[in-house]
Image 1 (cartoon, helix red, strand yellow):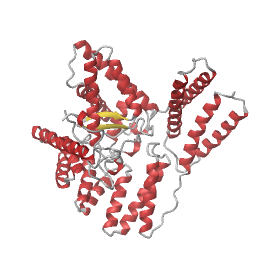
Image 2 (cartoon, one colour; image 1 turned 120 degrees about the vertical axis):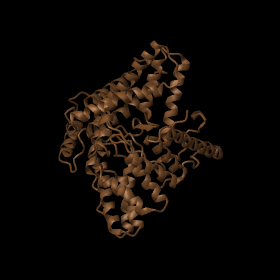
Image 3 (cartoon, rainbow, N blue to C red; image 1 turned 120 degrees about the horizontal axis):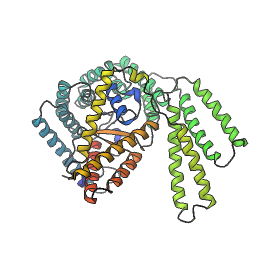
Image 4 (cartoon, rainbow, N blue to C red; image 1 turned 45 degrees about the vertical axis):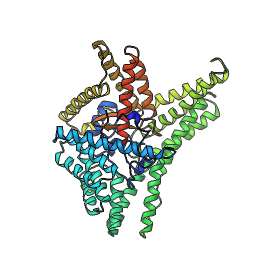
Length: 485
């Protein structure tokens, strides 16, 4: 079955209730630094490579999507797609019983299908076969805990979560929160409260930008409210959350963009500009004394993201005006001036991790070299995977390789300057069937430019094949199961 036959997604629209995919660009928050540094080397910032399926309410993957008219057909197509994923993973296991990824992907599919016993068996096999640094065992522990919970084996689920929490230096709210709820259900109030408090503290740190701005979204605030409500139901009250640092960061981003826009209207000595300068000076002073302190570069990233968001709106407005007026029209000239000021603001707030950061210093030269080799290998595999089935002449393949490398370099450069873009614009580097792909509006923008460049030396049919391959991979990743060819 072709992915083109599958409806837009086989997951419920509220994906947090179905598959929780950690995608935010927050360097310190992932379990294995080897994962994050490898991504850092390849793309300029950190993103996870393994997708845990982990949530409080794992609904059936083939529930009808909102606003989907043909519900019965939707469910049938989705069921077929998932079952085909099981078949493909099973074939891969038969071909190589020692490879852990097919077990992991099949376990994900079984979990989505509600076959929790089969999922447990596959995740257990992944853990046994764990091949080390870039293995799947951590996500397998997370997903197996979820499957155990669904089977009612809550103590086993707690055991898996405890392994993750105890053997990992990352700060994963979901693991603490899930374990807290399991303890609560088992009547272990003391341990439940302890885990709730840790989750509460981590969420406040995330919302205050302690780990970067990747988790500073409203969803985290909603989870924080849920925690307070659940703890209150157990007869314990938590202090009101202190999100002063978050408010300061958000105000800085807002004021910086407003200042840039006003700078297109007034001279630097104008009282309005001087007022903005004074306000920002005070805000940055407050930020310097804030507790907790945000992660280095968080303020710059927030300012840059806010500027990009405003820039996109202005560019659309300009395009509309050009339908009625010439570029010399005063209204368009003014917008051009605002756009220029925003671009200056973005340039002034670029932030990229330095090569002598403490994160890289903590790795030995041997480890760094290993990750670089892995990067080169993965880049080669990506090219072969993306262009699978596309027949090319030697000159065309050389051209395609160069454009493929250019595409990733562009993403790397953009990502280094905008590590934590929010609102789904550039927010995920996901793994499907062992390969990787970006999602988000900004990433798709880069991808479309890449495909357009291919048209200069490749046929329309060849480019369409690549486009369909990327679509196929992305659809597979959304489900967390092997891609269907």
